[in-house]
Length: 359
Image (cartoon, rainbow, N blue to C red; front, side, top):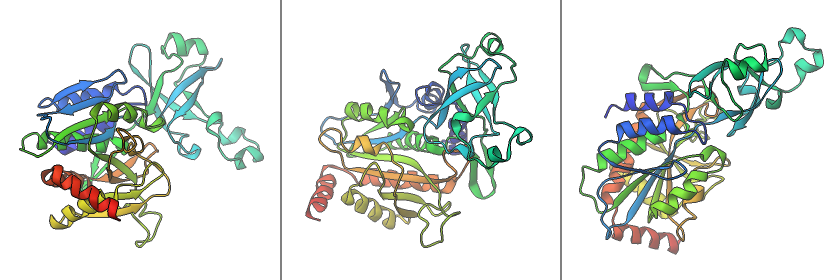
């Protein structure tokens, strides 16, 4: 499978929370070898050969990206919007966005704010508030936005960015949080479906993570895993911290999380993963996160408790329009999970849990 092409198509796809259909089309295109199911929320499930006597491993990623939604249209044609996911106000103005209209076409607009020429000194010194920003699609009236551009209330809005490759296998694009994870789920499931493993694997592509881990609450109940692995994209920190403090640097391998605001990850599972990585010379870095979360927050609490591991691909500037990530880190993440899956069976799972409970 062409990893670059897969990631490019997933990154370029538009998928605001609750509007992930275009991303699902890409997932389906690259998952033709697998059995594909979906539910009423639009979570997607990828499987191959399921045998009842084997343990089930859930490999998850979320489909959606941080985005916006049309809240109202003003008399002068400017569009007021609300956020879908965690945005910082200073990262939003002066960027172009794409708004889906009632014909399912995307209309380009500019996130506008009052020009400095018209600001008072107090206004120039005031911190920007997202509620004060508007989107301008080039219209001059509310009627024009509705009748000509066919933009309704509730329309999803996404960043306007196209994927490209940089030197040294550095990727640039939007929505690496979490289209990198989606690509990793697809590649892992396709590659593992060709192997005779001691486990069942269910790949879950979950919706609406950015607005409260909502899809994962449902997908975990359907998958009923005995263990779970969550692929994510972590905010890279090497630009802002020294080398002793940084825990998510591009080019230093997959990130293994110990905790974040959603989960304290299973120590036995972490130990098992690190042993696999060390044995196979797979590059990894470890993180103790203060904030941020993953679908593990819902998954590890489901079905009477599920030991869960979070593996992240470091990505610079997530929750903004533009992201950087290393294709090499992405491949290390897939390699680690594939080697891990080759070793897992009921006996290893029991050992893992026994080690955990004796700690």
